[in-house]
Image (cartoon, rainbow, N blue to C red):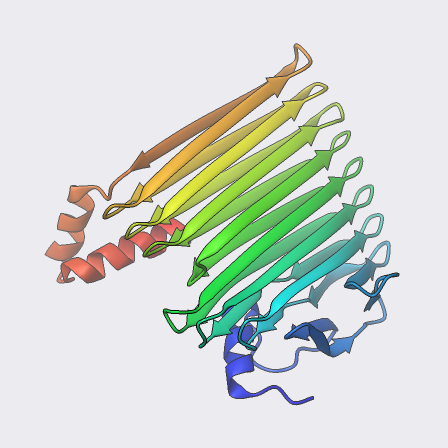
Length: 307
């Protein structure tokens, strides 16, 4: 099946795909896989019940990438998918996911993506997921990603979760289990505008000794949008965990940040910090003194903040 210009524009926005990439790949369009290919070290195929994908990265694989983007262009489509990713022992790989919705109707277009990620002992994963919506102001674009990740002994994972713009409603759920000497870093960047609403729930259980976790959240709320950020760190053994939430509030928007720390061992070290505020006036003045208009200065600050 040949993808049209609209499809390719969405893929470029969420996954930096300008053509059909080489290597492992699955492109889901309007609920159906339209492009699928495996590589010698990465198997991409349907899961047991046909509800989504099973992606298996062989042990010892290095410097390989698998693309698994989703795009919706059919008005009013309600799409749900269950994907499982297994990163074999000692592997070092990248997964590029994400979803783009184009909705020109008055109906609601929605994608619920449930991803289970298993990072085996000593493996290293970089996972990127971008969300984007566009189309008629009358149509709603809803994205509800769920991520369940387990990092086994000595493994590491970095998750980059980005909501670019145009998503009217989202509930983002992440649950992580990190075992002995494993490490997890979650970077979340979120933009809401108009009357959009976003809820982000992150729970990390540090199961093993010397495990580590870090959550870095950057959020911008504009218009009359509303965001809720919750992050729970649970330390069951000697571990190190940190949550950092920084947000810029504009117009009549609202943001709520709810960090929670739960230590079950005396040598569990868990910390958090949060800051919500407006753009600093001195930043605007400095950029405007360099010749930028006020709007350009604001956009430059926001782009840098969300980068």
